[in-house]
Image 1 (tube, one colour):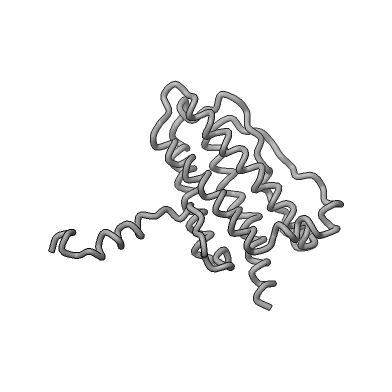
Image 2 (spheres, rainbow, N blue to C red; image 1 turned 135 degrees about the horizontal axis):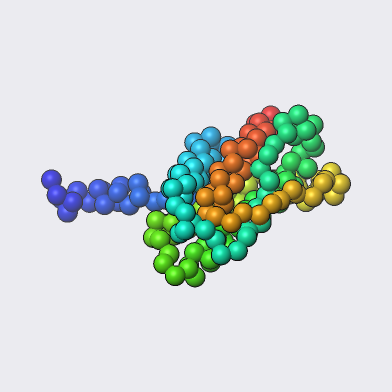
Length: 192
């Protein structure tokens, strides 16, 4: 049976080839609460980190890029108010998005941009946009803005990196750490 004989096959292939990083309009409001969704983004980030671990010259950035510190003191995190956690997640996500966008621009302006590197950076840009949209639907931005605890929160800790590998390591760690902790708790609160 050829492709032309089965009209549903091209449609199914098209659905299977859609990258998860693209925002889905009309998606269920609590899609981020499905652990498989976040795990897919984590997997993409880890793949990008693994691809860039072996490259040296082509993965160096022509300038230092500021990224959020992804270390989590679990004791302190559990004691934080919801608004403080939401604030850290939003600040980290915003800074990480800026870092990946800057990496994308630097890679595009390099003398010989690698298609593989460009693909992973593009996926990260798309993934961060989707995660931002999913978190907005979850209402985390309102918690960060409305909560009086956010005003008294300490400024986000940051540092600079100079390679794509380090950018992707931070991206992966942020998703596996603060974002996963926060969404897990936010989803549990929403289920009550």
